[in-house]
Length: 245
Ligand SMILES: C[S@@+](CC[C@H](N)C(=O)[O-])C[C@H]1O[C@@H](n2cnc3c(N)ncnc32)[C@H](O)[C@@H]1O
Image 1 (tube, rainbow, N blue to C red):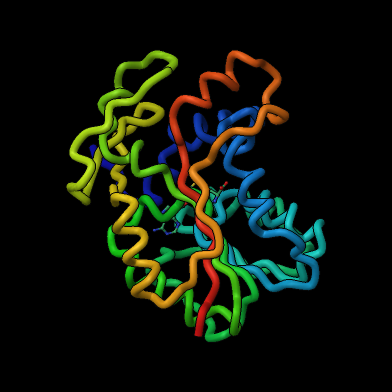
Image 2 (cartoon, protein in one colour):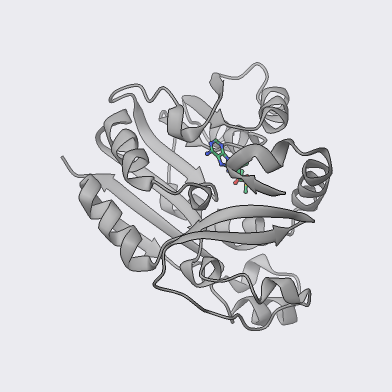
């Protein structure tokens, strides 16, 4: 069975494995992706934030502890949003169960929109980028991360089930559906070459402030060997965009 979008996160077995893996605190998300997202967001004090695909809401807790004024999480999986509700209880938040594609997107309401490792599950990003732009205040910021296009091009190397020190890049310019067998389930993701992201961003009228390919930083790794391994393959693409008009 192929799982699309958030449906896999509601599968008991997958949910168990995913939450265990993230709970260890040493996933590339924590060691590589989050430090870059944090840096790109900068000071969030007093700001109103929308998070598309907020998962368990733990990042919302961090942002509020750093002084954000309000956190609105959108999440498709009912299991994940239940965790978010627990984690964010009693804080200034709104939590919306539903697809990123169908969320409410209040007009000119947010200082920052974030989306961490979610948009590679979505085929049509043009309409999402339009909605994100309309929901941002003037000069508002959109920071998102996706699996790097080198990774999403082909998951053949992933299926080799070894600690990878290289990757097979294939069918790079053919945007579209890819199936990744991830934590025992067949999960559908959508590959887009880097140039396609650039075109989507420009078409939506965003200015690119930063583009990062998730180069790891030594201080986040306990072991030199793991750091060196992570220096070999870019795992994530992370962009900071500004609403230009
Ligand atoms: C890899 S997790 C990341 C969660 C969180 N952003 C984080 O970084 O910890 C992806 C999350 O996006 C959600 N998701 C995927 N596609 C979605 C969609 N189309 N609409 C809403 N949520 C979606 C999943 O349910 C899952 O919680």
